[in-house]
Image 1 (tube, rainbow, N blue to C red):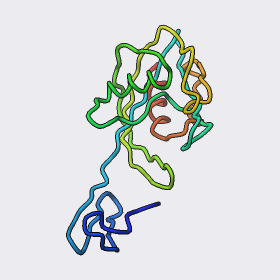
Image 2: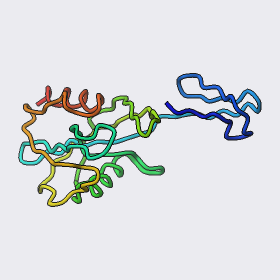
Image 3: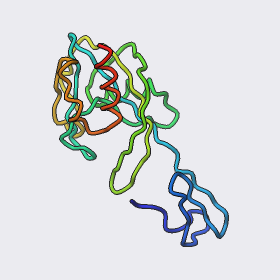
Image 4: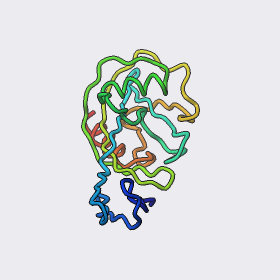
Length: 168
């Protein structure tokens, strides 16, 4: 895992990491907090089936996922879901139902991000005719009872889908 080697404030080497979220400089007392990133994902239902994606990028390239992504600064989770769906699937979605949140670890380019994943549910009236092929290799429609939960890239998604499928 990559960490800071030098204080971003005074430039002295040997900044200390508490192993959880704080980087502290022993020289100038600067503290940097590595706070949780927020991400969103949505279970999209079409004609009583669930729309899954196959990841086109690391982490988890080739594994299953739900559409979604990171929340931008000054953006609500709901707005982030709608933006991500527009960007990835090129469709608009309507009402969202909040399902819950789960912690996640997202390792990207040797940096480990602690993430709080927020999950939503929505019905869609049409399937995407096009999608962002850089992020998504394939779209897959499955019955909720046939979702291969162990094939998903992230444990947080597996937990959400386990709860969702047991409610059906």
